[in-house]
Length: 485
Image (cartoon, rainbow, N blue to C red; front, side):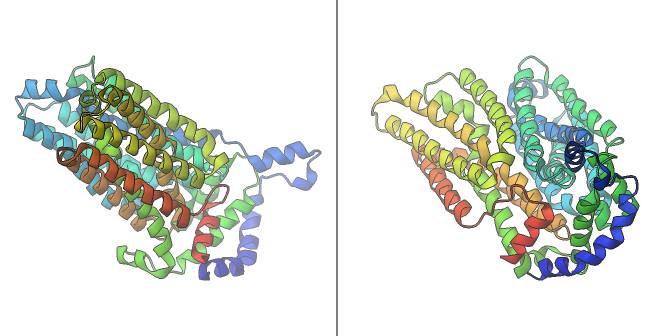
């Protein structure tokens, strides 16, 4: 409540100080001849928002390209470089270790040199990594390149959704932030498909394409207005916000609200990692960390990394199943972007977690029947329905929405530290699930899916009892409401 009260106290004086310099060049609503022009001015011109989002999500595509690279190239890399299965396993898994390091450092980097600066750093690591892989003649350059691309992915996974959320108007924020997940899925799927016809070295070069677009585009798009305001760069803040909203749009109220909130937060000490567990921040941390825990430990990376072998073990065509899986992932994630600002975050999370729970039960049932030689003819159909329902449900909410909410729920003075923590939890969970999946399957194939079903059941309870709805609210309103509860 303290932040909310301080914002209200500071509001009148701050608005008066900011209103005059911002209103220059903007039309007075009283001078308009009809209501339609007033409506247009209040809505603003979102062209630059869309361009900035496109540039940023090129980093998301690079993220997906890195994830999807190892699957189609395993046999050819092992053959060309004479790698053992163990050496290739290190190559594949070291990506997540690089991403963990990137996650830890992403928040401080984004706070120190800006959101655009952090994306440049991530791009530099990805470019260096892809080139190292391309020129590799042995295992060490290959692993170093993979580690570097993983670091870039870890930074991208934090800074891209945060950057988009900080520049988007509230009525578009959910859809635009979801574009992050769409491009990750697209990058994975495209790498998988073109990797079947390109050599592993050529496929590595294709990873440079989104990096080149991102580097070029960053010269033409504005920095996050909220980060500029936080740094006290008032003139650049106003310029960036006006560029994003359109030169004829009255930005006075939005700028005043942003400035008010930041001025209040600046009176608080700069947050360190341990400060996140203070009472004023703990609810945001629980929401952010909890969503990432349920996202990962619900089984996504185990199923995603080994989907081909899952279909094969159930007696279904691995190629048909995997291609169908990839297409559904992209299509449903894209539909999620359309409806997230209409239906809200919480309903999508509930539908998604419920679908994941049912999907895991179906997959568990199919492998139970197989293990006990019961209704064997039904096993392939049950497995396909369960796995495809799983990816549809995950893409409908649990895939994208936790990243959207991560970009919304943290006050800007702790966003760097909190974002690093949440992203680290995500990547640690990704590694843990992908590493343990085969061990769990060897223990009990159906028991593995029942375990995931139980975790997804807990996710339903968590969403109902802990997660707030953030649809249609500014970032400042979200953070004030969380602080006030």
